[in-house]
Image (cartoon, rainbow, N blue to C red; front, top):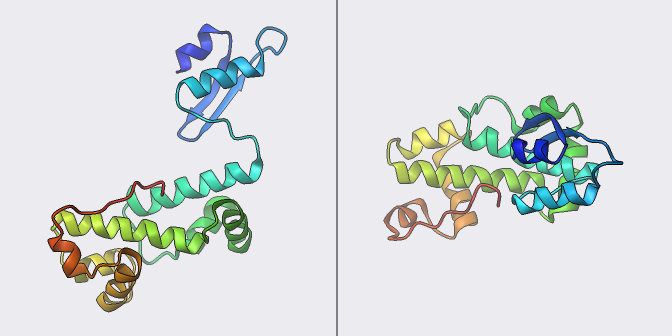
Length: 169
């Protein structure tokens, strides 16, 4: 995509997952041309600061739960506060306003998706999974799992087609 931008005269200053900074001469190229290039490549431009913050929060939660060694000793709220240098109250309020779900519920949904993945991998016991994912007990994990999925862990394990949701939810 960087080459496509350079081809039309747009310099890509910085590009990383979920964040791109570009420089261009407005007299030579229109913003609509840039937007068109983004959308034709399956991306969307987020200009609103709150919407951008929500996307960053979602990305950070997915990264925390799915793509790193989940550290159950660090509270999710503390992790997010340290990452964004904003109060958890602020992050939660902005998130809920834009997503129609609380930030806490979003984190729980992500954790349950990770638990499903670990159950399917069948490499750890439920006790190990509960500890790894920061649950205080197997019972608490089992109760939350049933509330979210509608299945007990045992029922989920024997399902022929395991239901999984994408990490973006």
